[in-house]
Length: 496
Image 1 (cartoon, rainbow, N blue to C red):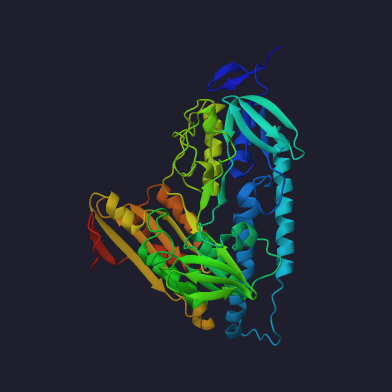
Image 2 (cartoon, helix red, strand yellow):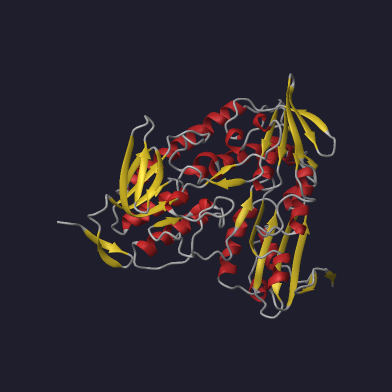
């Protein structure tokens, strides 16, 4: 007897297909979509490349970029790097460090690798417990309902599915400059056998800033080169000039040498390392050069265009608000769509895909008030609109509230590093449109602020909330005086 199930809100006969859903890519979005779809009664299969910390076209691993070579290992290294500053700050708190404090990179690397290996196993068990069939190998689409799986030994199999979901994420890209083969990407940087003594980082995005903080915290001499006047992009992720400037000052204060408005033009292998040449005529030698110049959607080997799936100029899969491609049976979620490339967003898109296709609950992902963070040291975290975005989008005046202060901990440690906070408010509705913070614990604080903004909180409600004292977070509810009022469409800032 053929099995019937709820598909697209109706009972459908799925006996003509091997699976109701076949997912290519077992990262955050793919795993979530698989598990939630199976929870709705779908027969689900997922394929992923064999596990390895450093990805390529033939290796990857269940858990994807975030778990294996992204958020998780990166945050572990950030924790490790942060101890250097803690040891320095401890002296004025009475801690007498009589012996040299040495850093053992290999020990941290070993523990990091153990942890991501453990998580890889957990993700496999999550799929198994949900009843999802896991295949190891490379998948590509051969027709609107067909997937060809190439196993590690070269054996090929074909499977049919009512729906196919692309969740292959993205991969680090390298700028096309001479000698680019001598550089590494974030994949390799998370698994270096030896910690470099001198490092050059090319890029001004969050990955570049995070690795600059990591390596500097571990005692590496770091030079950071980027094309713009300030690090971080202005509009893409809502980082405005004020907060970008704070981050730049903090990076310099921690010992990182910044090279704004500078491009690398050539890398040359030398006896004592890698010689770096810039468009300003500068030359220096480094033990490691890290390219952190962006990531590209991982679609090249999926055969999507051959079956009619539309891609944009970056190679990202074009989808509608429900994550459906122009081929009705093929869908895509996560970084491969190049919408908002964050792990929690991929998880949300995967969940909503399942609700739409197998749960009878058509669901669109809401991209408003999504918080995110740059885990440099100290970190930056934001939610909602930047000042510049608010000026462009609002109809009336925008009120800007700011606070810059010396954290209480620094008054004793003597560290010269300011915390900065900012609220962007619509003068007509009094709604808080955006919030930013650069300072210790910023991501932990901003998660709570994001809930308030998602609920439509007003500045008056912020002001009426009692703060936790003494804490940095209380500044968000004590910023009473307007720093400036800006008229929508006018970028000039007027001090009040």
